[in-house]
Amino acid sequence: MRVLFITQEITPYLPESEMSVICRNLPQGIQEEGKEIRTFMPRFGCINERRNQLHEVIRLSGMNLIISESDHPLIIKVASIQSARMQVYFIDNEEYFSRRHILYDDNNELLPDNDERAVFFARGVLETVRKLRWVPNIVHCHGWFTGLVPLYVKKAFREDPLFSRSKVVYSIYNEIFDGLFSQNFKTKALIDGVSKKDVVSLVDANYVSINKLAINYSDGFVLVGSDFHSEIIESLNLSKKPVIQHHPDSYIKDYSAFYDKILK
Image (cartoon, rainbow, N blue to C red; front, side, top):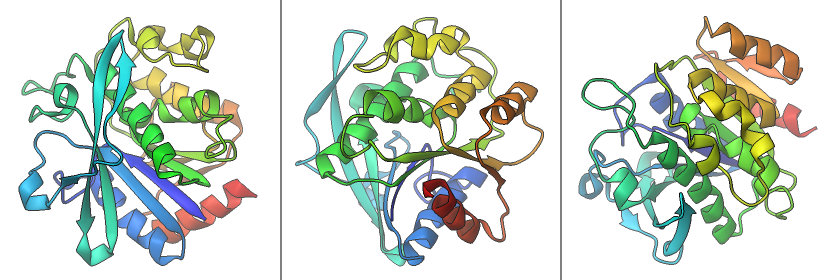
């Protein structure tokens, strides 16, 4: 089995948080279970490239992604976590990821271009996997910043032999943010294979609607935390798709078994 992990944060590249720790240990644990993995995150500007020994993968870089009618170069970097015998791929672009802020500014407000950054990251990961010619059985997305990936896998890439049989698992974290993405988010998110009807829920692009969009196009879910927004729970119930709760003491084996279940 091949599992593609897509996340907005991994320690030691970013400070420890519930998500960054899970996304550091989970790929290693799944690899030790005998599965093949690839792991992707954004190369935020606060990540020290020299200390973490990031280097550009020239053969994967060089593509341009068009967002809002502008070309944005896609740069791919990679680093190794030696103790885990694991590589991490980084999606980079000077305009979107060179600043030191991650997703929020000094006043804890959403960065105004997070919508375009999320589009670029989701598309960048999938285009890079396509270049790698690596076929994932499971695509496991972590956090709202990856919320467009399920849509793209199921709509834009559904006829691509690499993704046509992929199942998407989406981990929902209780990382609620206030505010909205730009009103143009639903337009910026459009690519070949994705119609306006597919993104109609993004007319008010906030924490809830982005998660609901991911729920619509995923095959199974992991709840990390408790006391989730009622609309998210309602969407999960209406989907009638498998859901598991994250348990800190057993999650690697739990997730591995969940992947097997989703693929049956």
